[in-house]
Image (cartoon, rainbow, N blue to C red):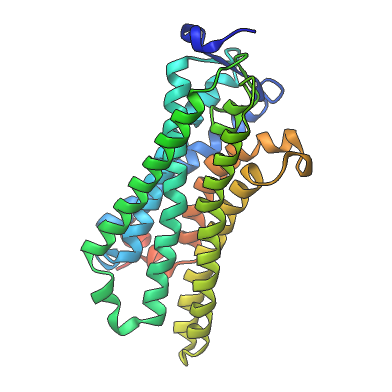
Length: 303
């Protein structure tokens, strides 16, 4: 068998892109929309005086994360959709660490956003006291460091495996695809992967759903129709974003291989790295009057 560990210079061949060259235009357009949409959210959060709250602090962090998340994979993916299907060993390792780091961070950040919404709706009188700038930065740092710790542990553990070949059956270098390259017993790696993925997906999603049950109860007690509409718009936006990201991640990592189509499984990586990052700004912009108002003011069409 060809042992990649002893031949780093040859790199890897991404086989997931070989049968789908037509995706190049779709992914390119989606990536450009992601860049424009998330950059707009960040710009509005910085320039809009009415958006200097903890909610938009986390939203701009999510947009920054989405920009970095897609950039860590999409440019290389576009290159490999062309004639060149290879990625260097260093490029693959970098993508492995960064992609997992940012993905795990986003899983945690969505929980922080749900907590912020919970406090805003269920503890409105204490909102500014509880969600002070110090706590916001602390929660963001916890999400970032937690994702980094997960990436260092899993990626390093995966790279210790003896690889039997260099053909990655995926659109990018990620842990589950790299484990499949190894020969010998990989049951421990798979168990660690499943455990960590459960912690970063199923557990946060459960927490979000429970908190939103309390939020829904609190919103229904609001007598103002306008207040209910505003809170339900925020509620709906966060819920859709959460289900898109966690749902695709659970499908790609936690469902047994025999219960999911293998070819469809390869499309999960570009889905949660490109599609969810693209639709996040659309969901928040189209359903949020404050963001739309800030955008109109930025364009000089309103006060």
